[in-house]
Image (cartoon, rainbow, N blue to C red; front, side):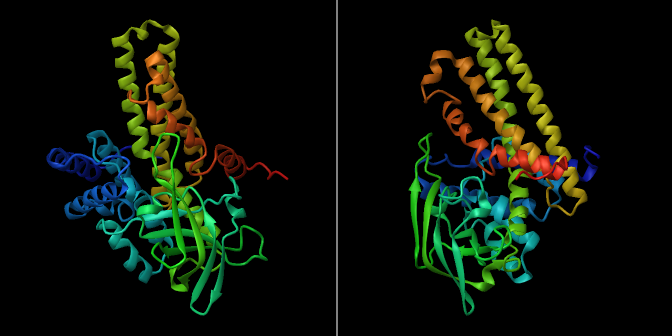
Amino acid sequence: MDLSYTPEEEEFRARLREWLAKVLPTLPAQPSPDDWSARRAYDLGWQRMLYDAGYADVHWDASPTVRLIFLEESEKAGAPYVGANFVGLLHAGPTIAAEGTEEQRARWLPPILRGEEVWCQGFSEPDAGSDLASLRTRARKDGDEYVVNGSKIWTSHAEVADWCELLVRTDAGAPKHRGISWLAMPMDAPGVTVRPLRTLAGSAEFAEVFLDDVRVPVANRVGEENDGWRVTMVTLSFERGTAFVGEVVACRRVLGELAREARRNGRWDDPVLRRRLGRLNAEFRALWRLTQWNVSEAEASGGVPGVGGSVFKLRYSHARQELYDAAAAVLGADALDLDRPWMLDRLSSLSYTIAAGTSQIQQNIVAERILGLPKGR
């Protein structure tokens, strides 16, 4: 395993830093978190700037190491987060790049890169819990179309999306992991109903989606019919393997801010708190090294992250929660004020042991696919 960077990669880093330093001061103020139409426009505008500067394709046309450098430097510079582009750039786009046909790649990838189309993720269902493969949304083939009926929940960015990466059951008689297909569904199709959901932190980036006789062309299926579970594992490998890279960098920055605040307000004198922050510093340094290891592994295996992403996702989810619990300890009674820094992040951190696969699911993956333990009955 080689965690060093080549001269070409370091040249890319320097060029990116120079560009970010030049353009970031020119950006307009970010819109209100509650104004999703404005946020969509802002996020797509930023993506178009990346495209025009030649940085838009790093999420699937560049090597995993270059992708890592891009995410690291963007976060360090305070560049806009991918926001509404999250699913398209970090989930659906890489999946289509890896599994789609030439025609599918030509249709969907350029609009994502140019900041023209937003995607949402239609995976979770109300009755499936953490067992994604038990989904019930059905797709019946009718000529050259699928007729889709069912519902999805926690559909990221559904209210502003143009397309949905949708998991459907195309063979009700097959074992549950073998009767699933991965479809690209247009969100403006007749029969699609979107109802936004408000989170504990007050944001509304999720929605319920109801599908009533929605017609999706068979040509929009990525991968073979009933092979959607394998395709989904590709999607989830990106979600768990590299999608959180920028967040690790952000957490390391927050940790430094917490140490400075503790020194300012006198809580640094508490040796228990100092040890807590020191342990978190070691934790996030180790997570960064694990990220580099996962990227190195992906580099050697054709660009798709491996099951090491589940190790990362499992530990990162808990470390993030511990970080913002430590933030509450630093703030003391001020932690009850949601307008204080880090407190809304503390609320959102509670979802991380559920989002992108629950910690229990990640433990099963690590046990079975890495440690070789037998499956539970």
